[in-house]
Length: 280
Image (cartoon, rainbow, N blue to C red):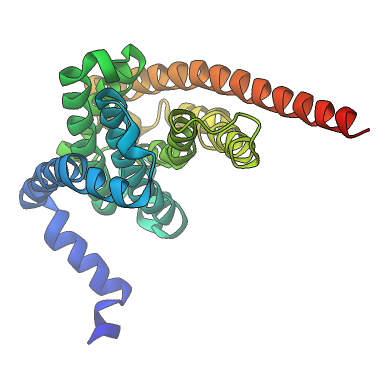
């Protein structure tokens, strides 16, 4: 029975039953609500408890630092789940990859629903704890993403491009880890800090910046086609505008990350030279 369920035909029937048509749209919005509440529980209950058990430095943090710590832990969990599923879809979901605009959006809608629930959760935290977490760039990022995602959830449009965007989440765990090291007062020239800084810079560049030419080439290649005209003006504008806004934000963040990484590498190299001269 397990083998029957794992056959491609069975997977397609399951996707059609649960994520196709009006009923599928209801399931997607139920996933959004469920995702929101799961991330709320993770933020308020699970993360503080586990952090107390696993990190001796957590209990010494201020209330503001604990708030951001919990938020970043939830962010990392979301990034691993959504980014991992996005990679799976990119590598194995032929129904999406064959038709970039109107391909079968079932798994992409599931992933977008999970991401939307997280974004709504994070938006609430940003507003509620604005003095601690507030950031106009994050606010713009979340609003632009949700604006585009509602077309995917409601009408199943542009599944390939929506999924392509979610792969960017794979750089988030390294960004959050940099903050964890900083708040725990790890020396900037510590090996783990330097290695994470390099991994953060490389991963951010690969999944958010290096893919920009390919993304827009594929976007432009659809202009003028029948599939593009079927979208209508609203989805076309949502797709193009949200993409441009997100990539402007990613470029600004890339500049800041690269600048910080260079400082860490320079400081680490300078420290090693000082230690070498002292030993001589």
